[in-house]
Image (cartoon, rainbow, N blue to C red):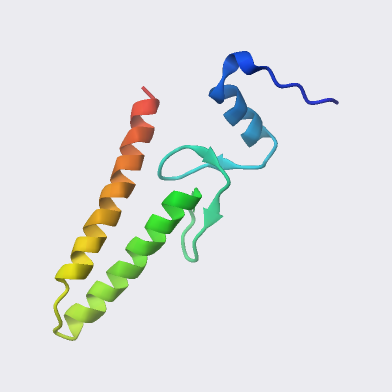
Length: 100
């Protein structure tokens, strides 16, 4: 069956088509239809941007715990973790707004 694409529906049609062709799925954080990536030990799948931030948050948590256990300062790591968390939260809130 030939594939026909109608531009009239815009991005929503492209997203649906993209998902139907099993090229991509919906990101667990931002909700965008994109190529998805799995992280070890996590059941969710994420788009490239979100997977990078989630992986960074996981790594930073491990590093903060290790530094705190060793009695070393964690302020710089906590600041970086805060920035990564803010980006994740912004993306998830934008996904919620697009559902309205």
